[in-house]
Length: 53
Image (cartoon, rainbow, N blue to C red; front, top):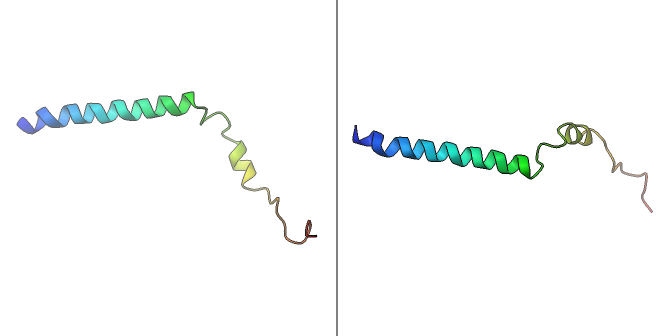
């Protein structure tokens, strides 16, 4: 029973820390362009031999 005295505040603190990290990432714009990175990974911009001097 005494273990719960320590575990419950730790679990609540970790939950609040995760929520704060999520809200920080939302405010920093991490989720603004969800499709752009998925499309950029498919574009091959550096093809060998095309722009070689």
